[in-house]
Length: 518
Image 1 (cartoon, one colour):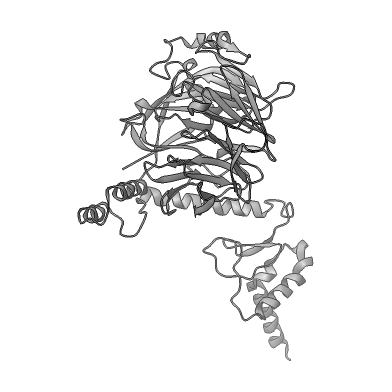
Image 2 (cartoon, rainbow, N blue to C red):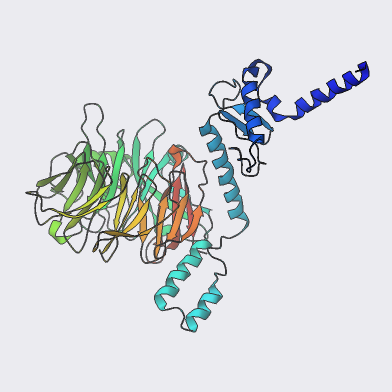
């Protein structure tokens, strides 16, 4: 071999090495794994099947997958997945997954801004009306399909919130929102920047299109304890109070607190007269009472109930003025007027509860996956009080009884949403797509509209058809997905009362958004 041919072959070898991605795996000081990379490449070339795709984005070309390495399609090179190895930007599977989720969220937001969503192919108002006129659709089916069409065209609009303390609106973050029975008020729990939580009521009666404006009525009742569960309570009249389950802190035990809605200035047409903002703390302190039972309608009342995971208020006449709390291996039923209590032992923590209205039953969802009903007529003696038993494979986070009380909807921490027939104790329908692994995420069932709404741990709000489990809409969060910014939602066909705006309210971060029907 002459000298010129040897130099030519040497230059060709260098170019081939530079073009081969396996020779760009690591920095010069990280060449100790080059032999492993080369052997992985050889084994992949020896396989005649189609190569597996990398864990990169969906648009990347197929590249061999190397355990312990991540292929970046933008930089066209591999990086180790060991945390801290790349000093400038350590890669982990979690960070890669977060990056891909954020790209997907931004893409969906961009698509929503450009065009309206269509739920099903060929699904429009004219075809529905024509089928209804020809007799192919009855009145009920036509109404359900009309709601589905309107859902598919909802567009995001930011709601302007006014308050006596505008500076707090810029710093406080929404933890949860809860609409009352008539959907004309929202109870809010806000995380305060300095730590702790404070409460407010948003009056939705001023929520009108096209200018979406609401007023936040705040109360200086402040707590540094975590709110485990909350529901509206009808003591003096419908939704007259808010029932809160608070975690214990240091030497302070946990409690269940009945907070009168009248403490929030002008939050209800029948509320107390207007008080200046400086007097609110005085009024709250004067009305506070830590003894069982309620002597005056406007009194704040707390019950020492340690470790309550869930709560529910009874509208059943056979359990009048009663609420239930789900504890660790126990259900506690309390009468707020007499102070009488009944305790029911369980085998697991009770994470979700709801009273039936027509029959004296209390349904409970447990961490073990069991769902059982307590027959309130039997008392807590013996074993006859367990009326119904259903089972999920994971911890139950929400139970909802449908209006005819023959069906029950339940969700769990495996992301399963099931519809149960209480007459046969069998699951008759599942709603696919929900995401949950550890969070307490409530279900929102709206039989009038024929839809089911749930927010997933991935921060997507999903809306299903209640009747055929079809996923009608997936709404991305306006905020990047994170554990601290899982949206809290409320849905109604009458947001703000009988003449209100129909649609979805979403609270996330410091903002409130409305998705009205088009």
